Image (cartoon, rainbow, N blue to C red; front, side, top):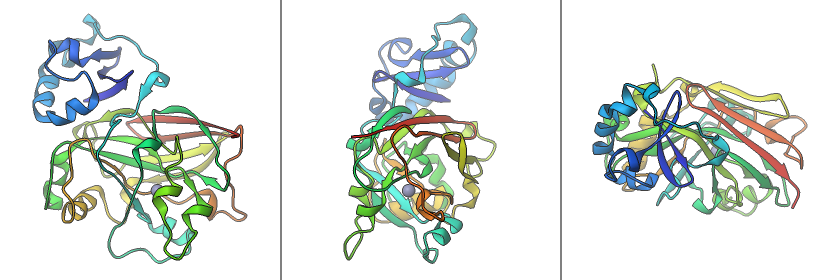
Length: 286
Ligand code: ZN
């Protein structure tokens, strides 16, 4: 199942476009994406059996839509977790040892945007981090790795845009602020449920700046895969429906290059994950 957030309304996405969930379900589900996450299991059952949705997109009422009109698949999560140094080669390019437990920080939801956006560059060194993003389906506490995927609504593409000067300033660096300027957390274009993938733990991902590939890796290279991240987080906090997890970035960030490279006005950033889709960000001067 693939869903999208079109102008705040949940769309079931098929080959021919989107089906408005609220209308097609006789007002039972939606209309917003957060409402779906609150009733995820019932929604999934409906989506799997809705004849218009599952079986016969050619009969309409799927309508083509523009990804640029989409918002984030989970636009108002109560909690947004992000993972630092979750790929060995990214830890190496950052000059630090791989962590022995997941390193968690927060991003703030005011930084969220849809998959196609223009980002105003704040002062400093703004860098890219293409990441697999997980959206949770249920309230969850003390989840074992073996059951973790059953609590995942789906996967989407994210960018954990980061201003490196503030990120590293102070005696105890404060990642959250430096990664939460407006527009610093785009995601989309669709949320893809785990069963759509042959192996949701092994997806190609990457990004390019102005057509030059900067990151190219596979999510199977994560130090702590999705199930272990969920188990770890849920050992401490209660995860809530619609919660978002940025799972960490592979190597190839600008700060890890020699010399370092950062985003400039006019730059175009394209990020992708196999089986999900692409983000497109254009950067402009303040
Ligand atoms: Zn990151």
